[in-house]
Length: 137
Image (cartoon, rainbow, N blue to C red; front, side):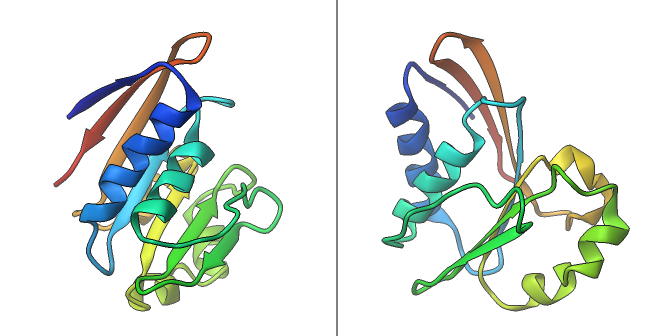
């Protein structure tokens, strides 16, 4: 599915729509350059999951947890150097907890994702315009 947005609110809305359809245990791998809107998309996921929280990038903490009927585990792999470091922070445990794992900078840990992972590729088209390629396996 391809979605075009022309502002941050549109990127949040795209995330919200996906969030409403997610089942416990889903993994969402998000790809995009710096400033593409990855965290805005995750804010939308949280909204779709009916999580009322201030979602921020977990760049320095690696993962932020948000409580909800289905919890959201928001990862940022920017500072990691591969899958081994991800497993060191308990990746397997998060996968087993039945929440949604939303992962920014997924290209840093390509071998860590289960086969049924949903991928979201965000491309900057200029100014606030974005192209989101969402692949649901």
